[in-house]
Image (cartoon, rainbow, N blue to C red):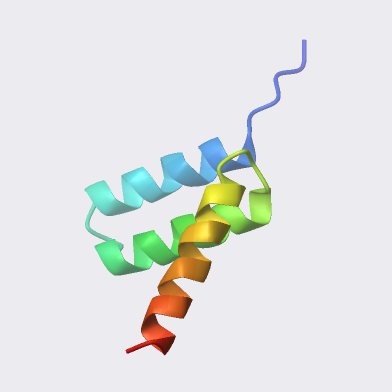
Length: 62
């Protein structure tokens, strides 16, 4: 019996344990999670793309 696990879930689990062991800072974890959402093209990728676009536009207007 083959079990498939989403890569997003696996990366999230790895990030959780890295944060818990304090091997990874919160800023790095945020960047890694955003990168994962963009690569995985999950249902959350659309809102993440919109968030990234909004942040870039907001920084450009400063």
